[in-house]
Image (tube, rainbow, N blue to C red; front, top):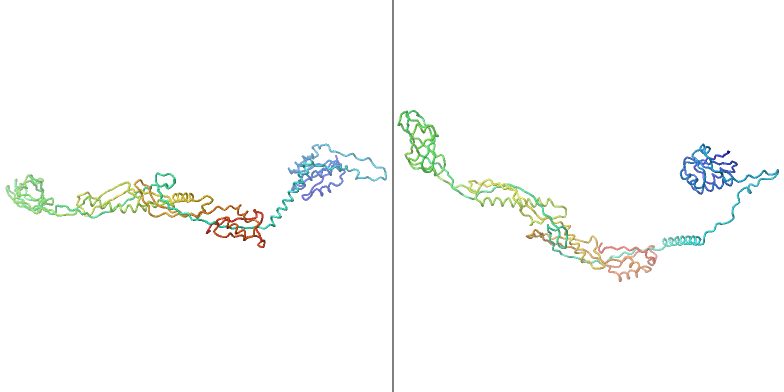
Length: 504
């Protein structure tokens, strides 16, 4: 079947496409869409082309891969193919063909206008309700335009008011309790913290005691029993065998004749210092070691000179003193260490810091020991109570809010809190301190009332009406735009109300 193939350009519209179709004398017209662009993508364009093809008596088909064009074409009953070859392989729906006119007699001209389908002169009338709805819609659109124009041309005003604030001040006696979980009235939470510290130190002893200071001295006589040994070395030990034991040693070596019964005198001194070496004559009668079998010994005279002297000694008070000195130093270190554990906004109740455990305590000397100094190494644990200022502020804020009257509000950011430095810890571990809370209470400004009072008024009268109706700190400021306009707008929504905090 004869067909006409028309290629569309990306810039084509309905008019240019219709002109390309011209007066087709073929039964089929193929419109080929360009690969790019959005040409004739509206359904109305395709409907008009379809009607034009129908007036030409041709069956219209499309060659396109655009989804929108394909969807619109199928909704109108137009065949759509991806390629020209596909249009020849697949069948077209039977077109609505107009009858061809019979050949005209010679000399007669073809009246092409008569071949066009007659247009119906009957107009489609909408239902009555639809006509009224359309009129209402047009009226509303016009009214909206007029309102927009009036809004753009109407004056505007800004009213700035400063409500008169009053100062709220309260002093609270708060108790911070480690057993409390949350803020409840005047009782707030607290927490206990612990730290271990250690130090070592020493102090001079104050005690006195008698100590041996000089050894006893004297002389003994050795008598040979076998006549063989002739030398008695220095340091030979001799002792008593009755009464309090006392030991002595020879000061220097002596020699004796090699005969039985030979005798020699030797100087001795006590091994132990002190009076224990002072023995009477004849009490030294034994020799230490092998010489005890070769010689006999005795002291013909008492030994003398063993003496005592006073020396420093450790007392219980000395130990207590060095402990107290270290604890004083360690408590200061514990306070510093505990403060190092504080989070931002917390404080340590200094008088709550107390010794809770002695971890280790080592003295270098016992009570009664002879010593010039008594050393001590000490490790102890301290604990203290920590309070969060934020919890105290919450209690203060709650009290301020409780003092705000009906019709007022507590101005945000006006709150100030001051904690008194004095704090005392009671016997149950609660920390008591005083907090001063200060804030500003301002009346609530009804902005709708402000607009109602000033709308349509001149500026002086509007200021007076506001000053009489509201609790203000001074006359409100009113600015009208344009500046030459003598009154505030009648429309409330054209009046802006600005509320400024007293002093802010």
